[in-house]
Amino acid sequence: MNTRILILTACAVLSGTSLNAQTGAPPDPQMKAVLDKLATLGGKPIETLSPEEARKQPSPADAVLALLKEKNLQPEEVGNISNARKIELSENRQLDARIYTPKGDGPFPVILYIHGGGWVIADLDTYDASPRALCNAANAVVVSTHYRQAPEHKFPASHLDTYGAYQWVLKNAAAMKGDPKRVAVVGESAGGNMAAAVSMMAKEAGIQMPVHQVLVYPVADMSGTPTPSKEENAEAKPLNKAMLNWFGKHLLTKPDDAKNPRLSILLAGEELKGLPPTTIILAQIDPLRSEGEALAKALQDAGVKVNLKSYDGVAHEFFGMGAVVDKAKEAVGVAAADLKAAFGN
Image (cartoon, one colour):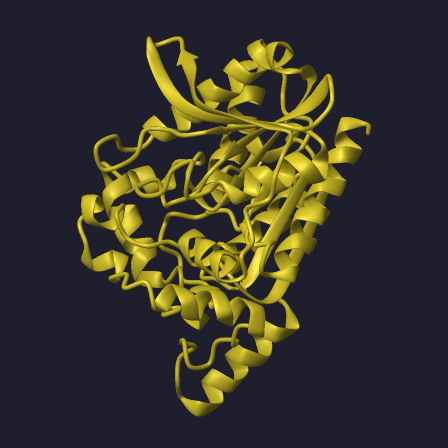
């Protein structure tokens, strides 16, 4: 536990109060501008809605796009974007995908990007900014994959889909100006969990593993274990403690699923050994921060090289906000530098 958390915990004990939204850290001015804009878009609390209703709510990405429109700015440009692509899985099932390609002839390294949304909400449009930024910053082809979502398709459907997408990338990298020997995985939130699971599943199957994994505020423990950041950010935006419970309710078929090491990576133990070098990026205003810190330590204890970067004053979902949040641009730069090193660039 770091010094900041220890101090917050001590103050809470002395005052007889719990760590909550009032004792949590305030956002910096740029992050606050995004959250203020999000508040004007009329969204309802996700945890009070059905999944169908929740999928229609405005997202932090919508807030960023609104700010860009006010400034007469456009989303980051890349060499080429191939929309409406399909990833063919061996089970005669297709996944929606979007492929971002840098300018030039290649062959480029390839990134499988897995978006977040708690396994229930969000899609390729919601998480369009991060693949754009990674494509340019890492000079890599980025394959952004969708996956089956809960509650229509509960765990492990999404994990099986993203592992299938990884296998597809290995087989088809050359056809999209990519180098099949230089493939990495990047995921945000639930996607960060699945990125790590892809590496674990590839290792277990004895196939080519990713050369690097970037886990951005990953879900690492679905067991409901209390953590300092869950209490500190219990009412935070855009992700809070009640939403975590809501996602879990829709994802899990039975309570014991939460103990599966593919979902609760902190329970993986020996399976963490031999995983690829890892970059973990965390946000201060995020209930997932503590489990991200714990995952970094667990990986290091398992002998995995880890670069942990945590950013103060920003919230969950900040990573794709580089157009309006400087710390997001910095975080993408850290991820890209680590990816380039792994790619041998």
